Image 1 (cartoon, helix red, strand yellow):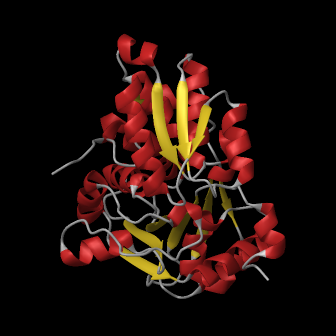
Image 2 (image 1 turned 180 degrees about the vertical axis):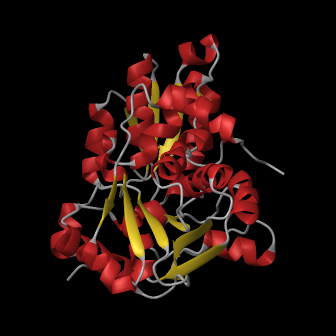
Image 3 (image 1 turned 60 degrees about the vertical axis):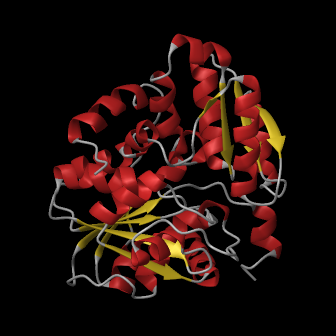
Length: 320
């Protein structure tokens, strides 16, 4: 069984805390009234690069050998991992190549280049960009920084959970979005290492239920099609490592349609005055749609994973 200890997350924080922010837990009276819970929002949209994904690369790149650092790193990403790797590589003085889908959000492509990374656009979904990254890694001797299926990366992402458990030690549950599974893997292990009784819920789009489908049959499956348009949730195949961790540490996975998640984006913007992206709204959407079953008044943390919104979609897309 794959597992990380509290000490692993504390060690990861030594690398992460030097360059990443400790993001706040915020409350919303209207969200409490709408759900009947005592809800806290872990605001990773205030993190550097606009999402939690700077954390994992800050820890991962510190584990590389001098030779690996000299050759450089490569990753594939829908956008947020790209920015995280690019900034971490810039901080550590390492060359970074990033493969992104051709339909990646333009602002995320521009931000990645702004952090100094070389961007290669390929395919229309993360899995296709990932195949290109593996090809270039072999050709150029670059070290692959997987966006979710890597224990060093997961340890870095898990510092989100470490902060939650430190700031709210009597929490009853935490709700986390699931794409490939890296965030929920780290958060679930970190939280339960400090608050063993806390429950962990994962949320996926019902148009890309890769983790829920895998857990249901007991092994990782590749989805035949993915209709989800939310890039942070749009993955055909979750990680082998993340699947093992989620199977052991996550209490339940719920799914709901993209339209309900987009409605939660607008709800949070309107009621909480916070700008969050689609994946970040999934935990709030799960609460608002009654998918989380807990005793009234339970202390619940929603991980708002990022705030890199495609503003063109906000005005012209499925929000209308």
